[in-house]
Length: 115
Length: 113
Image (cartoon, rainbow over all chains, first blue to last red):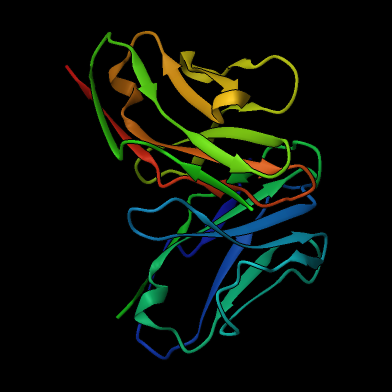
């Protein structure tokens, strides 16, 4: 596909469970970003990868959140011991490279609901 | 630190009327400024951006925005609203050397037939 894809589109889980959210960036994009959008709010930055390494994880809210990008392409956001407050739309974006003003292209998001 | 304030969480305009969505930012270094649009069940799409140079920037779908450093503003305008413009609009800022986008809380634009 031409754009950023995210799976699943919707995820419903129970409090305390573990979830994984997947992001497939645009082919050839070296930079990848995760954001979280709560109801009625703008997206909030979580973490940014340049290649395989997390270059900035300052937005991760606590140690229950973790993200990986082992081969520099697909990324997985992992949430342990989910809480109701984790319910939100999780957005992934990718850009051709970091720095400068390369556009961040966003995926459609994964809507996470924690019951 | 950087932040964005969007005045008006909901704006309604008549079809054919001027669209004005307000955005003010704060940034300790020269900013890059962006407007994104989000249609229902779709991802964010870049409308336009300001980096350096000309302060009036034109984007897709007839939108434009002007960077005013003295007012720390980056308001979005369109001369004549179309029904298809109904969506949520987000202003965002990124500082030089910082990769993360900081978004405002968004403005939902409704077009009245």
